[in-house]
Length: 198
Image (cartoon, rainbow, N blue to C red; front, top):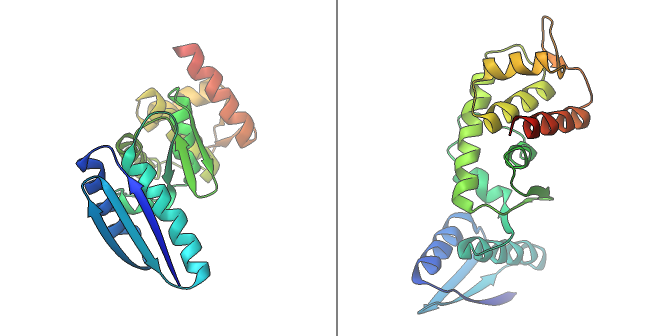
């Protein structure tokens, strides 16, 4: 079975970016032809495989365009392209960007945000390094998420973030540092704390 998709881009750079994304992320058999800023993609495979491939190619086209408004970044693409030192939960990226004052939300396998793909990629790589640093501290997994997000949003070290969160009543001090509240309540408190610091 075949499906043919047609895309129009504004610049040749967007076309090249789209072609790079396709080469790197599309796993089904495909043929691409270009005419100036028009790209035609023909996908081949079984129906179920084609449904996923069509959705991915459309998201990659949107990502290549960049554009204004909300950008949909497929998490698969983000984590394949990012040079990660440590893995971390995908929704931490959304938390961090929200703490920084940007719109960001994970919807299924897509991160919706107002930032460009490059900015999100940069944030993911920095978060990965902070997760590696956080592993040196006795933190529960939920506490680690909160501490890393707070440290990233404030631009401070993990140690400083731990101390500030203990003083703010978000973390419990003990042999292992844990959240004093539910994860949802802890994120709400962090958001309030960060807004008070601005």
